Length: 393
Image 1: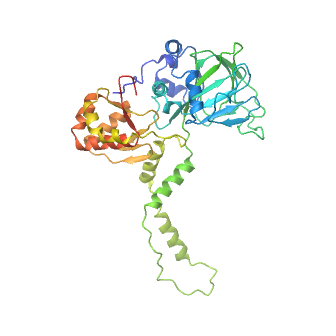
Image 2 (image 1 turned 180 degrees about the horizontal axis):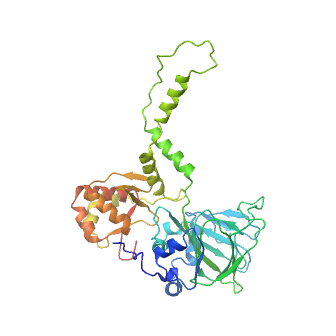
Image 3 (image 1 turned 45 degrees about the horizontal axis):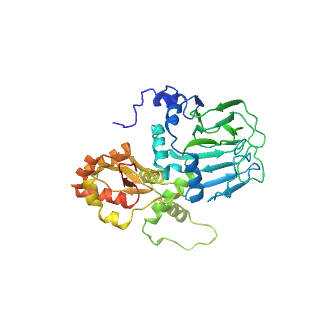
C-alpha cells in the first residue's frame, strides 16, 4: 500500500485529476495550469522560505547561481553583500537540490512521487527581483513550476526558433516569440513537458520578492549510461592474453587475415555487458545522488550505537533527504551502489523504497534479525537512512 495516495484518487494540486489521468493526458504531452493548487498549504507555511534560500546561498553547499539583468552568471557561495537588494531590478538566484538540505522541501516532493523515484530529480528554488528571470529557454526534462511567493509571468511557445544567443553562460533563445502568456499567483502550479520554450519574468512592483519552486526530473543521457555500464563491466573482467597459434605467414603484411579480424571482433563483443547486466547498471545509475551533492555521513559514536538505537527508536527510520533507494525485479540500489539482499531483507528494502520510511515497530523487529540489522546499518553508515526524531528528520 502506497502511503502517499491512490493513483485513481483526484488530487487537488493536479486540478482534480488523478495521477493516472495526469500521466495519460499530460505527462510529456501538453502543459497543465492549476490555479490555487497549493494555496491552502502555502497559507499555513511555505516548505522553503526566502530566509532558507538566503541561508543556502551563504553556506554554499548547494549548487547556486546568481543571474543579473545581462544574464551574467555568478556561482555560489554568495554572501549577503553579493546578493542585490529587492530594489534592484532584473536579478535571479537559483538554488538546486533544496530537498537534500531541507526536510520540508523533501516532504513537499511527496506530492509528485506518483512518478517513479528514478526520474525525479530535485526541488530547485528561484528567487527574483522585479523583472528578474533567466531568459527564454528550452528544457530537455519535465518540470512542475509552483509559485510560492509573489507573481511570475510565464510565456510559452511550442513552436520556436532554436537559435541561441551567443557569448552567454546560459542557453537563451535569440528570437523567442510567445504563443501563450500566463500570470501565476502564489499557490499556482504549471506543468511543462520537455521541448516547450518558456520564459519566466518576476512581476514584483512592491519589491517583496518573487519565489518559484521548480520540481525537475532527470532526463538521463543514454550515452553516459552506456559508457558507465561498459566501463564498470570491463573493470570487473579478468585480462586474457591474446592467442592466435593458427596465424600463418602473409605475403601481404598490410592485408589482415579474415580470421584475425573476426576472432578479435567476436572476443571483444563478449567483453561487453549483456542486457541484464546493462539493466543493473541503469538501476545503480538512476539511484545516484546529484554529482554536486555531498551525502552526510553519521559520526562514529552514532554508528557504534546503531543497533541499540534501532531497537529503541520511537520515530523509526526514513530515507535521508535527497537519498535514493530504488528497486527493479527484486534487486536494489541505493545512492549509486547495488545492494545484496535476500529473503525477508528484500521485503524490508521494498517497504523502505516504497514508503521512504520504516515505523518504530518495523525497526524493532529488524533489530532482532542479524541480516536486517546489518543491512540497515550499512545504509545508515552510507548516509542513505537517518533516524526520525519527534521534531522531524
